[in-house]
Length: 180
Image (cartoon, rainbow, N blue to C red; front, side):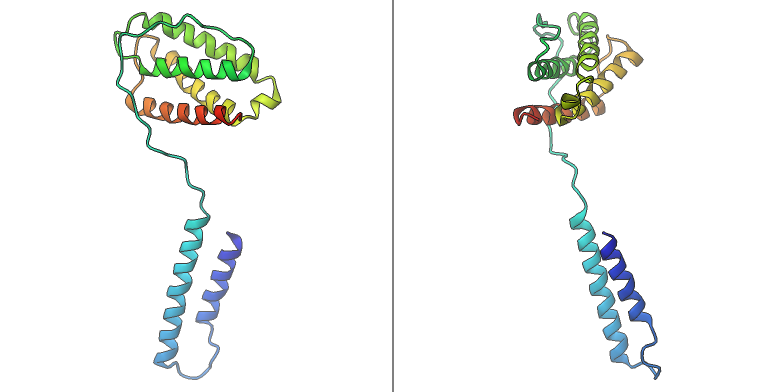
């Protein structure tokens, strides 16, 4: 990036330097204009190509539900892959719950406890805390726990927050499948 900027700056300086002290000809002006167009285009292309793209694949946002099977498997097994997958699945369901869902408050309280237990336990292990699945799950946990803290357990997540969480859940699943 710095090299391209430096080259473009030098090229620009050369294009405007009075190299020939004589009167400018039309062909010199045209050549300079063409050079500037080419330099600008190649610099723009290099910048665009070197910019990392954000993984913003279109994610399906499921309809909210009020009837569902209340999970019976709350809590940790202390095996990272299993726990991360379970917490993610429970969070996915929590994100799907709509206003007036059966046992929504019970679900939210169990969910928050499971999330807090998960983070409290696994963040102590550098090998796990460094995994992409953990950091993305940690981010999702903060979003969902923050929603519970601000709005309580009875209010469903707003659409914008749901969409972001579903994108993160997809990323977590991919990372877990790769063992990362």
